[in-house]
Length: 249
Image (cartoon, rainbow, N blue to C red; front, side, top):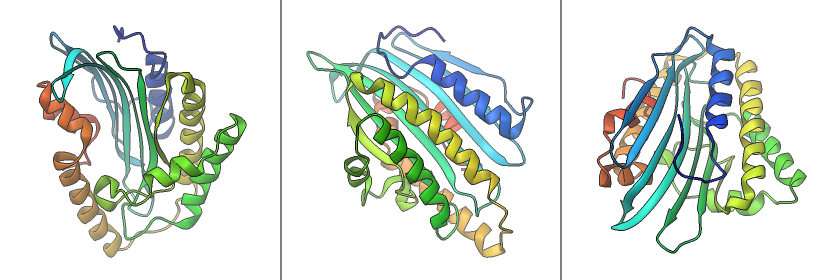
């Protein structure tokens, strides 16, 4: 996908990194055919891997040039991935990063990385692996994770099913190197969590998975800011369902 916006982050290289990650888990043959969509103001490249470990792992890059947000002309480049393990005892995973620029405004990079609770509660061991990894990345770049986590806490992200062990914040384009490193290390941390997920789920776990995925899908339709922007610019809901929504939602 060739991007028109000249933001330094996110980039198509990030999309390829995520694809390689899921291929390593579900296998290189696990991908649906790549979907390419476009209109006069937006374009999208959408991927989805489906396998025994990750029931669904969607990822996409969407670019909007000349669109609007709340009637303000705005350019946006979005990178997002959401993974849904088949085992409800293994948390899901989300990374969302978007760079946006409105008329006469500075570039704002919104970044969110977290685990997703699929059963009654994410294991503290998994949350600690994820948080400790992101903290180490932030420390290595001379940044503290506490402010990023405080911004995330209590927001009810993903219908209250967010692990709240990651980060959510508004960054500047100059933070691109930090965010690149966070994506790389967050993927490694999630691989570690998947590899340790040997818990045998009960029927209660599967029941909780169904309830949580329903809550998340409802939140996405009614509360997710990206979905609202998509509606304002006639980006089809089906496109977002392909890469972002829970399986069978």
